[in-house]
Length: 483
Image (cartoon, rainbow, N blue to C red; front, side, top):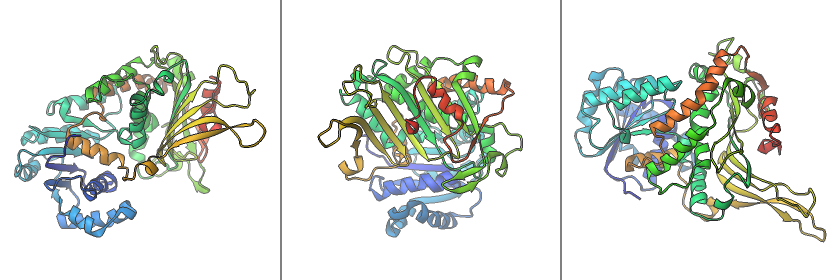
């Protein structure tokens, strides 16, 4: 593993939720574990705080809640010595000179610019950084999603950022790719021979990728009503997980070798037409109900949501990959808000045994990779119950990484931030991947735009519209929790 060099990490949007809730805690954990070099600075930028002292006071009060049992006062104090704050308005190019003066104290360091801002600021920030010479050498820029709302706007942002940063300097982050079970899926597939002969159409019946939430839009109504579940989750997180499941073995673990194989899968997705969107895609919108026994309003009653909004809060769809390995295997993707559980999982359903000597008292084998709320990998098999009679029941082999590995498992943002500092692009999305994902999703957006049909209603606290279950039943299968 490449050692961590001295670095300066600049966090735009330094007073925002992502920085306070995820990025600073991630860097704190790495500091606490001794993984950050002494010569590593964190420079937070914002408009609403007066100075470093006031900023650290705010960060400290929030950190105690976000870090929970991992908070240690002495560790926080030493970590806080790395942090400084600059009052910089990202929309005013002249104010970037103050940042340049600070960074130019150590001109040869790795410089990471994390743009935790609205995407319409990505291009102006990149231009302003270049204007004061901060895009040279070991400079790297991290772009948070969403990168546009369609293929045209995504291309525009990438073009404008690309005027000032080379592709190898641009880190398009998808935190799902940094989760431990996803990395273990790569290891299980490509570091072992056990699964490879079975990882194909002859033995896999279907694949299900689910990312669901119990929460509603909360304070994000203005953003979410313009985005919706398809743009917010399917186009990036779920399609990226699909590529990890389906890609061919790369020639090496090098960044472009991995991303080349992911790109092939995105390009092999069977294109959708207006007709197949009607049959293969379900969109829904939650109505008032109860989540965990607590009454919640419907989407249209949420503060800030227009009364006649047709924005989807749920999507389920069937995708097909046109390759020899996967021809005929349906990939079902599902995401939504105000559902019964908070869950992120990948389910690989294997085919039934060709001939069962036990009658119908068997269920097919299943591999379940869970990303949240807990991280685990389970292989479900059939086994005999103890006793004199030959009764079978499903059991699971649990790959318990917490029990086997004593060290703390880093959160996704911890791993990805360290990869940026190291210059490892393996877990970041390349521009042609992003373009291919948008190209596949666009026919869905166009079909919805041209349709008079509203999203199918579903009651908050359920698993979504009934049409979601019907989508799978037409293939003779069911969602994991229904099986």
